[in-house]
Image (cartoon, rainbow, N blue to C red):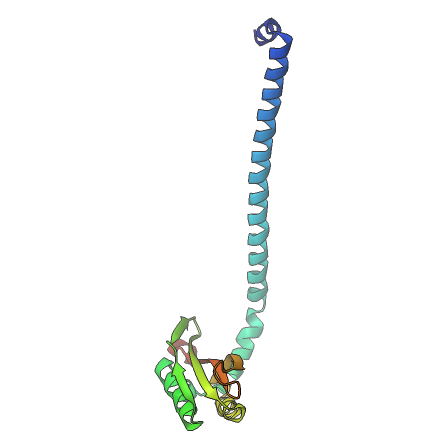
Length: 178
């Protein structure tokens, strides 16, 4: 039936119909290929994530073995909550006599601890003052850590420096202490 309809067409119509069929088939094949490539990419990403999780799970006995010793190193009373972190950073910056501005507090919860982060912007400071602040922050390690530090010359007076400190602290969850 289809063959008789095809034979009834002129040569030009046969060529155009055949070309239309092949173009449609190529579009369909390319669409299927794109879908398969997207699925393969998802599969590879998922497999990588599962392998990473398997690595962590395989290390569980080692982690469980080392956890008491690590927990013993930290004194819960010395950890800082968000308000204490902001107050401590402000106090240290005030002691260093810095023109400062403290940004908003960021909080990140996990099963083991709560991580707090605060940004301290310092304007028109001398290098010695910045070093003194960094030294003061280092004294509270490992409870307070300097996550990032940026420094640049003050745009109005290049003799002075502007700096941004990203300071992080953590507080152990009560379930972690048990």
